[in-house]
Length: 465
Image (tube, rainbow, N blue to C red; front, side, top):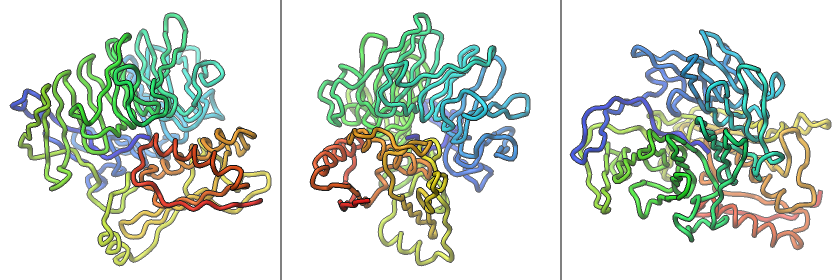
């Protein structure tokens, strides 16, 4: 998932002693005009445009398909802005918005995680596979498990160039499309689903990919377990333990050329120039602005700085990634709260609403409660149900378990959370004696893929319905 927590607008200041870029960071929140406290101009409450020192905000009332914006791509020829949202694809052109949804176009799913523009083609990554819109003919081409080697259809990111197009497929590695030959190829982790890297530099570092960036013949890949670089023949992998990355948990990667790249992680923003690393963040201990430089020999130098990208919004009642609190802080927030705010959790790109069944069920897929600065997510029981409310993978226990986890992950993402925020689960099995071993095997593999530590508390219950 795309975890937001760093800011983005900054101005170059000087070169550091290590000849790595230094910046004067300026952080924006709702207090100074940003429509939401999450990240960049892409927020879960609209689109922000920063121009001439001021923010201009666009929402659904202005024509945005949905208020939760996930991705942006600029057509450099026409200057049209393509916008991926939780409710469709948008285009901002000449001061007006156009919307593309499953109902009004060939878009395969309304949850658009990524978008990339190349000539007349607009490539999108959605919760139900990839797609390409030809802006000249207005025709759509859909790509999924039926016509590509895509065995998972949850595409998180897409990057397009003149020769190749790459997709990050969550749980399915990387897909490559050769523009000249019209051929698809997949790249997967040679270690399989192991969270331990057994064969370093022998292939993609992990199957759970979150972002791809392809520039000048070089592909960069971000995953939940490190980063990879691919030059068309050889793979190079990067881990926290043997590089300058502050964490293996990566959300995004953005390459500037074949050598240099930026990495968004859960423990800071990182920059790599081909030999050295720089990390920009508030110190994990003191929270003071920090810049760390690691040279090619592994020596780390702390460079004095007076600003850093923000890891968390300044106010405590925000809708993004959850701020970690100790017990006393949490109790203080709850005790000082004067009201409890709540709203339903939905993710229509993953599963339907229970009350939309032919025989409606009267419950929400989840409920969020905000008590002071404490956010509590309650996820309802779910199963192997798709976005149309249909039971899927009938007779395949492992596939049904994966689909159930897929649904829960989507509901968590809708509120900016991940499985690492989960503290307790309740697991209902129809025949616990028959199915528990297979269930526990699948659960263990899934939790290992995510690197959960500690594991959430859990109770297994037999439920004959």
